[in-house]
Image (cartoon, rainbow, N blue to C red; front, top):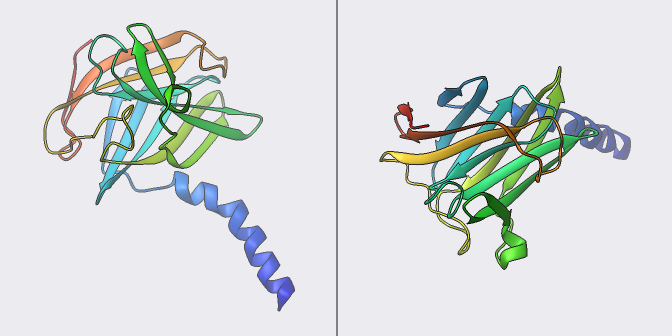
Length: 179
């Protein structure tokens, strides 16, 4: 019996990441050659970001002035391991990890993969703000987001290869490119 349980646990560990990446997403936004997909689920929202890079991919919520004031989720996959961090736009052209600023990393269920020079990450976060460096995500109104991906380096300090700003309605899926 113990062998059967051990085999099940090992199999679960192998197949669970693929299952989480296969989450059903209600809506998608095509931002140039980057795809942002999401699904609202009660008091949480699930995201999947995919871009043609071997570097990082990111989404920012409710920026005030360029990146300043934005609540940012940024992730990369290196040697098969995913790292997704919760950042805050603490300056117009930059951001820092929430936990370095005194908040916490409020990213849940981080998953990721890199295949054929495409990085895909998925994560969940609460709609409500988790700390003073997070923004509540409004789902029933037009909401501003930033999307971006890096040029091929996994460092979160590497520059953008692409970035765009969109107004979205997370409930209806409607979106409009701002810049």
